[in-house]
Image (cartoon, rainbow, N blue to C red; front, side, top):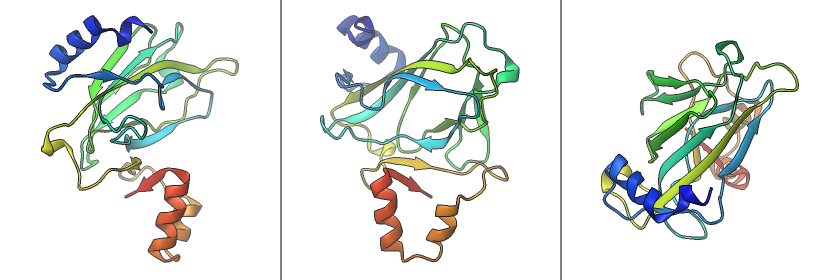
Length: 187
């Protein structure tokens, strides 16, 4: 992990992505580090939080390293990258061993693994997640405010949760407070 946060790697990553601002690794691994999803688990399509609370920096790059030696299509768990308007999944990436996925993250880069993992019991989907930041970013990558994770529904696939249905009848200020306390925002 040290090398993935080293200056030579950061310079290579900056060149690869075309980001002009200096990339800074997260020494706290806030939201990053080792991730494991067991059978039945999933992660709805979302755009990540856009600012690091402790560092006050803009989140720019996600890097995922997959650690699944015997993964196959039947297990699902693919990372899906969606258009901003959620009309189509533009890329689906199977979490095979030693595969690395690097993508820009901004207020409009929707991604997730919305289909439940279906690997056998005793197995899980494992990955190492590293996030990189900068002090500032292009205005075209910013919505009007700092935000936590923004979840979106896939067309015709994702159903509203009980909490979302309840929020239709609860005053908006109460809903916002409830979602903020949970660290999520739905659109």
